[in-house]
Image (cartoon, rainbow, N blue to C red; front, side, top):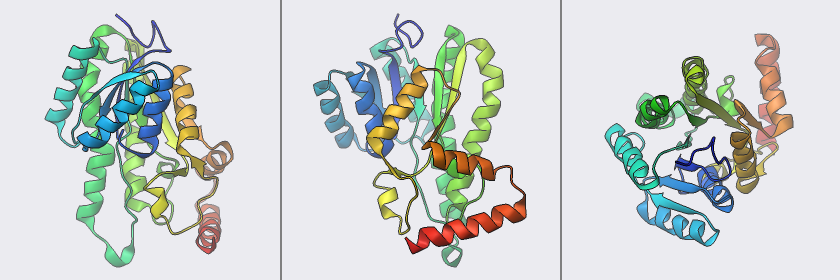
Length: 263
């Protein structure tokens, strides 16, 4: 049976949030590497079109349409992929969205809905694959979070909170499952050009294209990195903000946010 350990260049990858943005780019990048890719998103039509592109690029895969917020559906998708491909070597829990946090239109229900998608949706997928990975003594769980999850930033209270929760969960989970042979990788991108970031009305520093982000992510997964952060300069700046005193952090963020709004 193939696995990411036996043949790292041709793993069996289950990817959520595959229909657009980073997820779509990651799917196409893995196609170039000859992987078998299980594609999950809500739109079956978009996934079918993507699968055609994947096959044209030399890869292969399977459409597994569904909403990551539906735990039963994710269990069915995982089982379908195992039956079709013989197993799942890598789960990339990428499905997610962004919702600006505006004080003038504060909506707790919307914010919790974002938490259900970005955080709980990832947990649903992990639950669907983890028992089999632990039983096999191998596997790789990848969670796509964000640099916004490191510390509170303007306009991203709900989004950042959901990504912070995912980062914290995966960091803790790693202690329990790595000794049993299951790897954990946390992906924390900066600004990547996607349909979601196209909606931003401010200048996004160090903005990179989705295909470049996909190459960074796939390379990092293949190398077994525990954390993948990019772009380097922006990620280094955000990491530094985690350790500076609160007063300095607030001053730096106010200045940075003002520049971003001015474009």
